[in-house]
Amino acid sequence: MTATHESAAGSPIAAEPQPAPGATPPRTPLVAKAAAELFGTAALVAVVVGSGIQATELTHDVGLQLLADSLATVFGLGVLITLLGPVSGAHFNPAVTLAEWWTARRGGAGVTLREAAVYVPAQIIGAIAGAVLADAMFGEPLVKWSTHDRSAGHLLLGEVVATAGLILLIFGLARTDRLRFAPAAVASYIGAAYWFTSSTSFANPAVTIGRAFTDTFAGIAPGSVAGFIGVQLVGAVVGLALVALIFMPGRDAAEHSARPTVGRGVAGVLGDGEPHR
Image 1 (cartoon, one colour):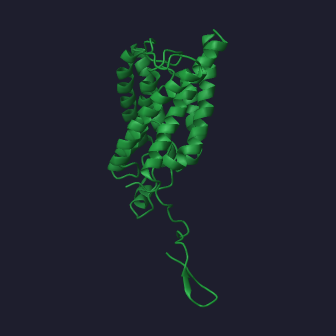
Image 2 (image 1 turned 180 degrees about the vertical axis):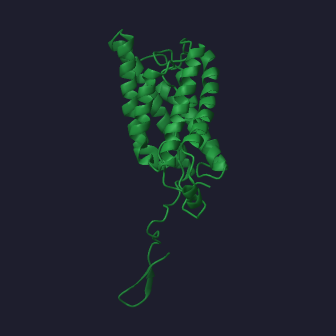
Image 3 (image 1 turned 90 degrees about the vertical axis):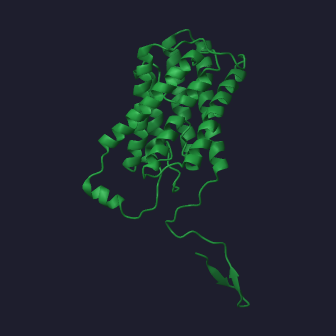
């Protein structure tokens, strides 16, 4: 809708087009979304790895090291989701991106296949860059493969639980229209999962890959990466199944959702307010 205003001389002067009240804002360019995902994932891994290095330099108590790492991750993740959620949805996680794409292809709102194909490489590149940056800040070798083996079965089970819970939380918030709580809720969940899962809750294939590049407190041996990613994807499937079961729409909700509405995607951890088709 374009508004016009009369000048003093009486000639119409076209004003800038203004969106109608309540209209969905213009879509963010894909390059900006990719940059947000790359930067956000890099920053997240830098927080995880950097705080781990700092903690091991300050204390030899493994419990305190884990506490410091988890607290830094909680605060850092909450800030990153708040900052970048309106741009890309603040996925920072291929499991979240793929889960959202899957729900979109089945008739829901979410990222397109083209967006997912851009998001996932950006997240992986960002994760590697974040690990290298953290090592550089603390004078560690820029790239040194981790020797921290994490291939035990109970650790893999922990990753299934961690990832399933994360997917359940994110998509459950979306189903109940409470994504505004995502920064605090997701960061709190990850902080708790550091402690209640045996794997300390990676719950993220990109972060898993990035953490293989650093032989520090937060590292994971390259030989353990494939197993972790495999069970994370299994966890994502379990999480989506739980969402479908627990947040099953009632009759009235199903009838309402069949009416034409403005699309609203999960957009990962925080919706960007844009329709995804």
